[in-house]
Image (cartoon, rainbow, N blue to C red; front, side, top):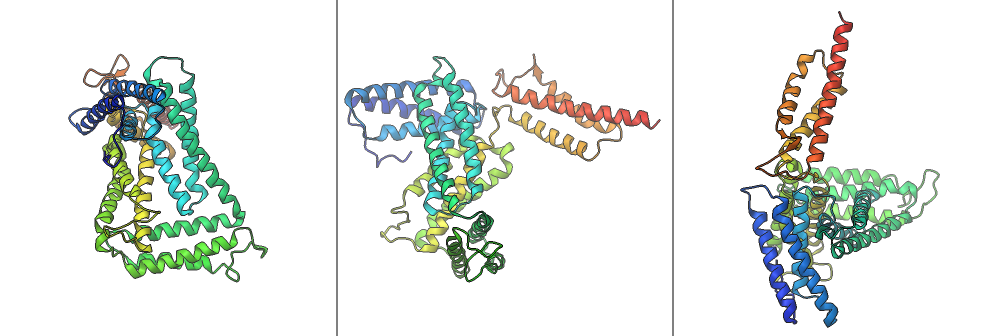
Length: 448
């Protein structure tokens, strides 16, 4: 939204495209804010078609003029596709190419930060690597679909495909970098990073706890006692590759704990607005991660993304600069960066945990997930002693089944996306319930 610093297009035709795209973006923002009704596919897809048409027109203009300079129209296109991506998640079309756009943006941010700070473990990359592989498969499947449907627009498929490829290249580069550590050092390296992050979390809590940081520092010292002459060695006493670097990381973490204990969470006045904004974002995303199934509308993530991007991009040479042009001290810089990275991490998790079900069907889907979990727990704990114990589960399942018309869940006259996922989950619950009933009946017959 904040695009004044980016110049307007010089070409009059590009300005026309910009005006039309701004109109699309504004309609999306209005739709995002409307909580009076569920978002439907038919609300989103015509706007998406219009955006694709404008992008085609822009590409044709630039092919003719040879213009390659980025201007405000590019920023608005990015904003539109970020929104479309989150709308696709909201309406349950998670496996289609447009849904990948916002996720690849967040993954790129996370990878850039990991690359910048050079503090990460294999665990940090495993989830990202698996997500990128899934996105790549979805895009390749979409490319094979021979259709004139705008939702398989060659432009968007190529754009998202390139974004995924770039992220995969960065991930592989980061994974290769970990090969510099001997196998026996990986656990220690991961443990130090885990302690460092725990200290950073304690450092940003509303009420600073000295005892919590001291306990974490003691864990670090305990790890350091395993060193020999300042080096982390193998069981046979040899020094594995990367030992000096892990020892250096250990010292950095120790200094960080001392710095945190000294500052006790006290932020300078000039950094207070940025700090408060980042803590608020982090805390709100944390709450969403706990109540996602009931309270998250994926389009809400757009505002968090934009706020974080703005703060992250305000850095100069990697550091934060105050109004007088002075750089932040080391503690402030690390504290603010931790909050930014943690928030991007939450957004990533919320996106990949998004269910392939429209928000109109999400209440039913969530109830079925809870029912399935309860039934599996009953099964794992030995089943039921009588069929009567299954009555509450059976009644709930039949009440949900009765909501269907001709096998479909209809909401306000619409057939929302995600019917297959909900029906499959309903069938699974019925199957588990049936198994439990049969087992209970057999046990009852055997006892006679």
